Figure 1 (cartoon, rainbow, N blue to C red):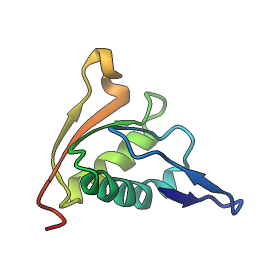
Figure 2 (cartoon, helix red, strand yellow):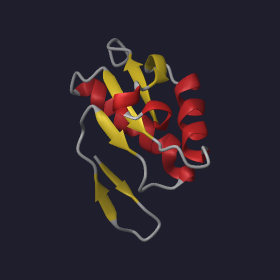
Figure 3 (cartoon, one colour):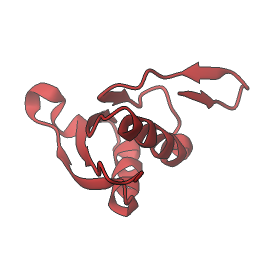
Figure 4 (cartoon, rainbow, N blue to C red):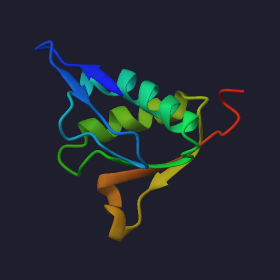
Length: 99
């Protein structure tokens, strides 16, 4: 997946079951997640760990707000401690979303 940043550079993101958001701006999170999760579903990836970090919680709030509203998401929860704990969220995706 490609996404443009404000400097007009294209960042290539491999479609995997883990997405690290540390290099993205909070304002870009909704569109990034929308596109990324669609690509995951296309590749039959239905469980994704989204790493937003522990910091001030800005990225986490954006992630959870998106997940709350998205029809692609069946459920989500904090990652277990060994997978990032409260610095990451596991989202379970709707395999029927694109059908």
